[in-house]
Image (cartoon, rainbow, N blue to C red; front, top):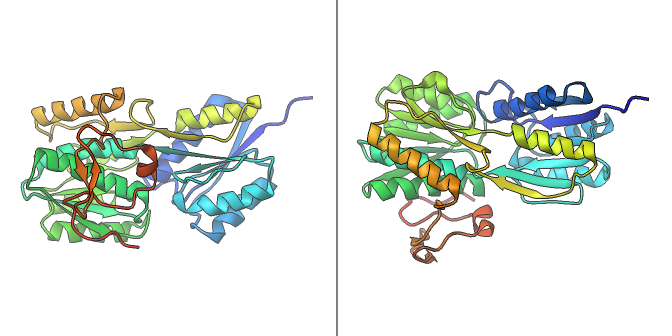
Length: 337
C-alpha cells in the first residue's frame, strides 16, 4: 500500500499577494511543493488575525490531518503552544517566537544583519540627516532592526537622526502609506520599513528624492529608485529540510536563527542609485557579517539611558538580542509598552 502523503500546513498573517513577508513564506511553501512533488500535500490559510482566531485555524489544520504546521507570525506564539499541547503527534514550527515544546520548534532570521547594511547606505546617502523608520509592533525583532540600522547609520554619519512611527500592523497599505508620508513631511529623505506592503515604496516614489529599502521581499518593481536595496527572507531551504525531517522521522524540537551566512537573509541588489564607493562598502559589510568576521552589535555600545551595554570589542549575546527591549544611545523617543 502506498504511504500516505505528508501534509504540511501554513498559517499566514497577511495575504499571499502582500509583496513582502507572507509572499516570501508562500514562496517557501511553493518550493516544498516543487521539491517533494506528490509525496507532500500543502495547505495554507491567509489573513489570519493574531490571537484566538489563529488557534481555531491551527486546530482545524491539525484535525484535517496536517503532520507539520508552520505558524508564521510573532503573535501566533501562545496559540501555537496551546494547540500543540492538544495534538502531541503533530509537529509545529513557529516563526520569530521564543516558546518551544517537544512538538514545537522556533525559527527566525537575523534580519538585523540586513539592517546594518541598510543603515550604512542610509547614513551615507541622506542629505537631510533624517532617517524615517516605520515600525510594525514594538517587539524585540523590530527593536533589534531599528538599533542595528541606527548604529550603522551613525557610524558613517554622526549627524544622523532617526524618526520612528509605529503603525501597529504588519500589513495595512493605507496605514503604511500614511506613516511614510508623516516621516517624509518631517524631513526624512530615507525611509526604512518593518511592515509588509509596498505602500511606503509608492509613497516615497510619489514624494521624489526619497530612498527606501524592500522589506522581506525584493520589491524590485521600485528599483533603481526609491528602492535601492532590500532584505529578502529565504525560507525555502528551511521549509524543505523540516518537511524532510518529518518524512524521515528525525524531526525534533529546536531553535534556528540564521542570517546572511547560511542564506536565510539575502541582501537584494544594491542599485546604481547608490554611489559606487558606498555600494562597495555595503557589500564589504554584508560579506564581513556573512563570514562571521563582524557582528552588527559589537561594542563599545551604550543603552539609550547612557548606561554601559557592550565594552570595546564585546559582542551581544543571542539571549539579549532575542529579548531586546531597549534602544541604543542616541535614539530619541520611548519604546511603546
